[in-house]
Image (cartoon, rainbow, N blue to C red; front, top):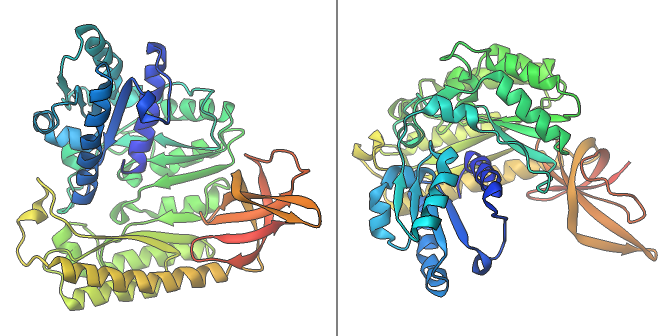
Length: 442
């Protein structure tokens, strides 16, 4: 559950448990071990985790030997309280102790249901360098995530990441490059570099800069595309902007969370940049890369957000013309400073603002997609679509992939064509939908 970092961590869990004899199953009823990797960035995400864990009581009753483990940010934050609330859980492990998971699982197996909590945040340097366990060839994928750093030092007033992920630590470039080379040797063609704030990569440890790391990754043979997430606007520097022009494998898409278009709200959020700073960086980026696609995050209904503040956010959205965005209603999070602020908005008011914002962005997204019609774009093929078509007594297979600008593109090729997964093909865009594009190979 949760962010891309959790996806990466979950893949690591799978790989380090292979030597213990475990293999993956998509059926809960067949599982001997269930690991729930949780997210607590918003209250809804945390409640979703508790709801899922509650449903696992049924499986525990049917299979007494079943091991249930809980990791991720809820585990790190709630610690022993989680075991008290969910007594059927056997293990609670935090965001910094993933590498100890096999040890804990073996202990539980041997001691027959001994409960445990392992959420210490010590030994972070050791743990961050160890992530990136050799790729499992049975899990072949075209795209993969690679963590380049963990933790955060920004302490945005609404965010609990520094409290559950710890302070910012970067991995050595050599570890990152070697991991990507292993992924490429097993068929991966696209990597997304992950960090809470990738733009500050390497600064604390005196390593290379993020733009220098991008240049190193760009040189890896066999790799077709590079993406990254997430950027903090205050650290989005000119050398990273120029990296989009200087590295041909770096995709023409930037996700740059703005959170609000109001300087008043940005100040209360402790974001350390202004509306004008953000707009200037977007303007500079588009001067270097006129065709780049930009997406963002927005928090609606922050404590004290006035109607005027919200209108400024809507105005920023119209000014930038984002290709897409993720918008969320504000919710108080334990430990986050904003939870103590006054002038909280009602759920009804937050919901009304969210609907208005999403309606405006929906119009902008469709407009951006319509602009792609008639263009020929290069697609990295991810697999077959669920739909096939019959045309003139010949089956037409529909494939799916993404453009460099991160737009989903479905397209058709004759069934006589060989497997094209992992290849890059040119597609003429013929139709724009709300959330995807459609075309044919040229």
